[in-house]
Image 1: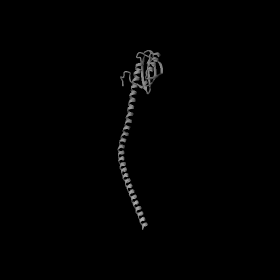
Image 2: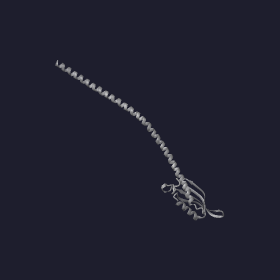
Image 3: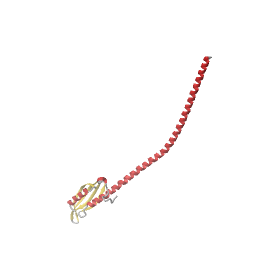
Image 4: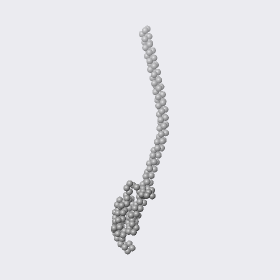
Length: 183
C-alpha cells in the first residue's frame, strides 16, 4: 500500500508538474501571440507612415528635378548674357581702337571666338599700329593679317586689308566696364 501510495503521489506530482508546464506553455504562447499582434499593429502603423513619407519623398524628387531644370535655364541665360556683353565689349574695343582719320572698316563679322574685319588703311604703318592696338585690348588674344593689297580709292592708293582677331575673355572673367554702366 505504501508503494501504491508512493506511486500515486508520484503520478499526481507528475500530472501536477505536467499541468504547470502546460500552463506555462499556454501563458508563453498567449504572451507571444500578444507580442506578435502588437508588432503587426506597429508594422501596419509604420507602413502607413512610410506611405505618407513616400509621397513627400516623391514631391521632393519632383522639386529637385524642377530645380535642376531651372538651374540649367538660369545657367543658359547667364551664358547668353555674358556672351552678349562680350559682343558689345568687342565692338566697343574695335570702335575705340579704330582711328577715324586713317582706317575705315568695310565689314565686321564675329563667328564663334573669331572676329573678321575687312577695311582700308592709309598705309602699312597705320595698319600695323591698328593691329597692335587691337591685340593690346583684353578682349583679343591676337590679330592675324589675312590679306593686304593696294586699292585705289578716290584717286589715292590705299591699303585694303582683312584681319582675323582671336577673341578671349578678359582676365578674371569680368565683362563689365570699369564704371559699371552696363550690367
